[in-house]
Amino acid sequence: MGLDDDGIAGITGDRLPDERRIEGDLSESIRPGGALWALASAGPQLRESAALAADAGLGALAEEGRPRALVVAGVGTAARTGDILATVAGPRCPVPILGHRSAGVPGWVGAADVVIAVSASGRSPEALAAAEAAARRGARLVAIGAPDSELQSLAERARAPFVAVPRRAPARLSLWALTVPVLMAARELGLVSLVEADIAETARRLDEDAERCRPDADAYVNPAKELAMNLAGSIPVVWGSSPLAGVAARRFGDMLAANSRYPVVSGELGEVGRGRVGLLDGVFGSLAEGQKDIFADPEEDEDLTRLRIVLMRDDGLDGDDSTPKPDTRRADAVADLASRRGIRCDVIPAEGGCALERLASLIAVPDFASVYLALAHGLDPMRVPAVSEMKDLTLGAE
Ligand SMILES: O=P(O)(O)OC[C@H]1O[C@@H](O)[C@@H](O)[C@@H](O)[C@@H]1O
Image (cartoon, rainbow, N blue to C red):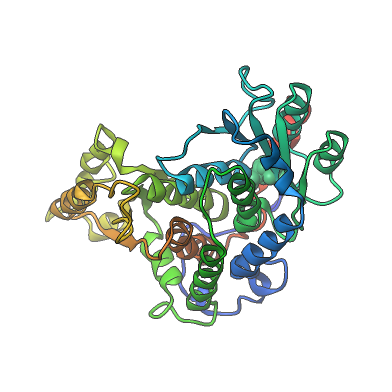
């Protein structure tokens, strides 16, 4: 498809996935600025951002002590950083951490609270309005985003710390660069314990996963290519077995939608058991798998769209008595339910010695898989015409 009368420009791609497309020449994606290049820079992003945040004067935040509440304001990937902070801080966090995804800040925010406004471009109306509202109400403000942006000017006018995160790729490919300053601001406020070794270990794991997922590693040794081809042609259902794994599951949902353009169901198993698990008995679940009609056309059977489960499994940290161990019974039950119905299931286990590293271990390979799945369909993961058109059509709506 190319340009048509409705102005749908630049939509390329093939309905059928072809593994050869991810075994061949991927130079477009690995050149600087390309999607695979950006994902491979996750570890360096994390280290660079930690250094930038350390120099941004975040210490001033601590002067007025612990806040009443912390609001992380932004949209899209910027908002996911708030979910990451909440899960890394864990259930024992002494103050509420709230993600705010619409313009401004909640009505109750005042001088006792802290607002972190995040925007990769430094110009999302939601983050700008939040920073403005926070300053007006006398809340402590931190802003994180592109250098020389409107967000930076706003932060400077409000005399608030600003962490300038270089913009080298779209927001969704800059998750780690945006997340670390949010975590470090919360650390200054005493809301999260994150030692330097945690940051170093997480960066090292991201480096190692990038190495395993590198473009010239074939599918049989590359877990991201394998996951991409397992999901190809299916409706992915991504479920996380704990709050932490639930954040990773929703992140995979973001990436599969934006990069691979797949519809996806994602969330935490805690709520799944209350109804969503019913999907397994539906048109794309057991009804597709159970079509064993001997008169059926085998080709038609091949064509049926099926669910494919990705179970992100977090068994908790050995030796950590400060947080309750995640209940793994639901993960076992879902795997069992799927196998009884013939629905295939990929399990990704969380690994690592701290919450941040465990989260990274659930995000890195799926991030790469979303790009490989796009490439297998001949889609350009960097250009999402529908998102650009949506922005054009709603310009000035806020
Ligand atoms: O982080 P900023 O630049 O505010 O963008 C926020 C979000 O905007 C949306 O339109 C998309 O482009 C998302 O991928 C992005 O995360």
